[in-house]
Length: 256
Length: 66
Image: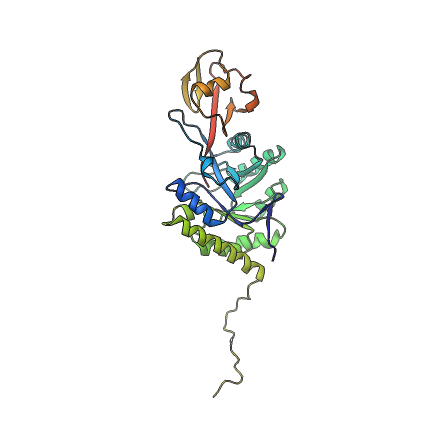
């Protein structure tokens, strides 16, 4: 069965997109990346340190990986736009994971600023993948602004709490059947990823769940399998939920 | 003259251009980007872009992130 994940005209083998932060070592990250099967990874834009020589972090990434820079750490549209422009210049990519944060405790997105930045960046030719609160109306606005996909959170960044509002994801899937929905942030364990995929997400973006696990390489494999399982289950179509039992074995013909 | 480079005040020679600035400070030149007073300066324009007193410059690269 052909089930290729296509985003902005580009085909990806994997529906798992992974981050590059918080790993204990570059080797651990590389092993996890390989095990995950992901072919798109996120990176962050940061000031070059002035006091010491630095090697390029990008050298530690598999060159076949599609690199998706983010605007993490930006608290308003203006900063996010500037960060996206810098990322484009440095990486020669139009792709940007747009992240405008509303407050440092929850790292919840500032949807209003995100939308403002998305409009400007789309207009400048960026492929804007926005991280936002799992809200249908916001998703519609971001898609109308020209984003090729929307990236609702499952739970706050790095919280590992899993899909906090499955109804919101389900509604988004049903009401936007043609939209590309990538669940970004909040996955903690493979079952969370599977749930998001079962609800109809097209892909999942995660970082901490793999990087902060005790064995990132193993967890990356587990996440890969969970994303695949959830996707297959979504395509297969789940059985209806019932309040009462429905016997699997024939009742008629049982001995008495 | 003084500039604000990545949030730090730096004393740099007059008549220096962006390309020379990066070289003098031993900053990497590959897969980085430079912003001068909040506007990105294309790599091709580094040698012709003079740094002026009180300029605010950001030089960025990439780090791990999610």
